[in-house]
Image 1: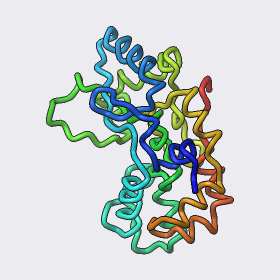
Image 2: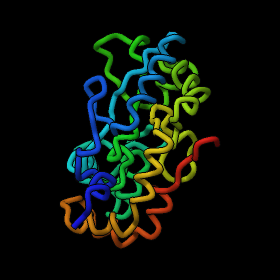
Image 3: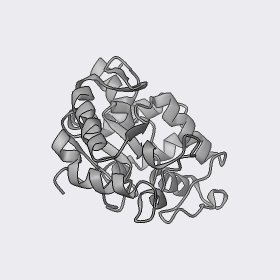
Image 4: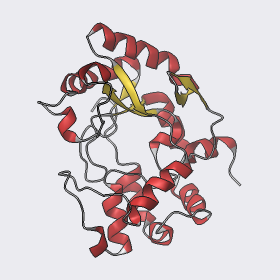
Length: 227
């Protein structure tokens, strides 16, 4: 039903990916990524990939575990949400603050990654990917500042640099400017509807019913490069 590029945009294919330091990334971004990692190293930062490509199935597992109260959901202040007291629509909106709808995650593209500075923590450090780690007194504050000042020099940007009323601020999430734009131009609300209707994503009827509101609020609502 979906062509190869659409499959890549939805997380249904790995044909567009290749290995980088044991992680899967979109093959066209590897050179820029290598240059950025090298530049960070010269500044005393070991820019390390915590998470890169996630397929539709993996994103569905994350989503379903949160929707079904197996995995905790947090609000914008990192406080746990009482999911048991919410209806299906409220659950979906609570989850989308930090976790994308399966089929709508930028991690599907292979152009986006969550990063940390491995030189600032012990090898057995349990990474949380929370605001405190990247704040003024957190172990990855230096990395956060470096990315804000340098990522775009190497073709990357922070799509969730600011909270714009949709996805929460994520100072650990970087995206390749050119290639992520390519996949976003392929992606569409209708494409996502078609994928969700064929899935086992928890609450998918609610998502489809409210996608006209959700899509511009949580999918395309990012901080653009240069902002």
